[in-house]
Image (cartoon, rainbow, N blue to C red; front, top):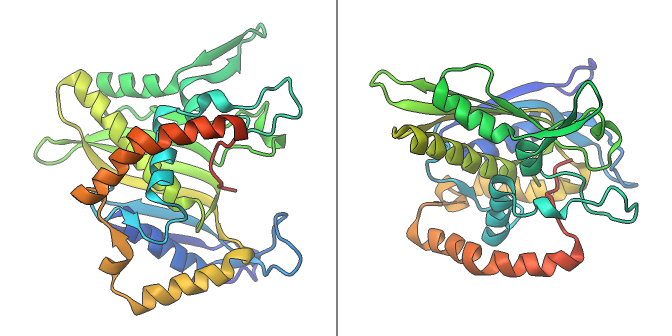
Length: 299
């Protein structure tokens, strides 16, 4: 499909692990996505490859979890996990009273734990959606209403950094042996397949693990991770990244999959992530305090 009939292709990939599924999704987007120009294109850039993408990861906590073609190093990957799951950059949001403040106007974590809204009388309040979800799973694991949203229709439609992730939905289902599994669905309105999707999924799977562990702590019952489903309205490879993708595809075609991935739970790899949490990320945070760096590229 090339979009010649005015339709955006709808593609679906699935597999056991995040590294496997992400690689498949990028290849399918390139081979079957339609050609679309965007407002981000520079003169001479070819059109983007674009599609609507549904990804299913059957065993999200299973190795190999890390793909060597991810657009960052281990420290940056762990830093993004800490940003999404633990809110280490929630305090870095732009000052709404300072037009010169170029920082982002939201973080995902802040929207989940301090989602803002106004009541019928105009009073401003916040709600902790993450706590609602966790406590909701404790009380009724198979509840169909447990979700977190990020979009603020009063702020985001005209903001230059409006959230790409729109919602997270969770539900616990028991298998035939009575073992509870936390299933998660995530929806994005727009996502860069090469430069954002892997980082997003890796961090959101860690969020899935955090929710499962907290529900398990409160109930005294171990909660396993069920399948992770990831849906993007627009999943794309920008024209400016076509050369990178071609080299990526050459490596895929010329090497064994085991050579293109890392095992996150390998003791040597785990030690690198531990060092990042304990030493590198705290140092980065101090440095970034003056540079106003926050958020992650997703557009």
